Length: 188
Image (cartoon, rainbow, N blue to C red; front, side, top):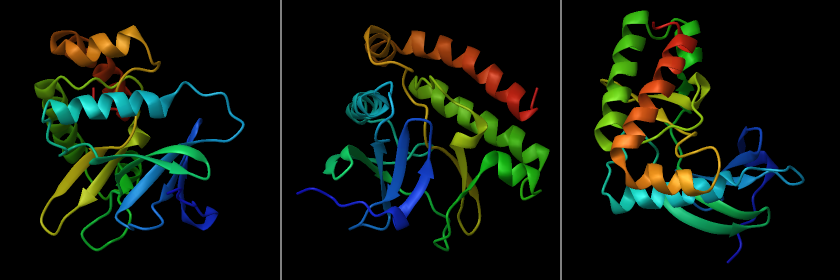
């Protein structure tokens, strides 16, 4: 069955993809390629990478749960957890939370440390990460950072397969990417 995605349910627009609220399950979202845009096969990359993470039994603690693929009126889509706070409001971006003083510099340092340890432990590679791809999910008594985009490599190919299967290489590449992200956030 093909999902019909409504413009009124558009959550976000990236360079190559659109993200919609799932029309049947409000707690989920659907990522699809933008029509008429040349893309790097981000959905193909994420499908491969998230299925690999599921097979490795990586906990989806700092990344959204992946539910599989779906046919839509925009073409193939990927279904993910929709990241929202305990009260149902959309979780805000890390960079926005910091600029609006909803979290402190010490919170940023702790969040970045927690994220790095998680991604390092499980050998998760972030091929295209920046601060606007990290959401702060508020529960009643804590906040949890969730990286919503940029996992896997930037292109579908041999590098993706190697990074997915050799944790040591994924960790080495992660360290380099992480320094750039910390610099962007002003954590260094």
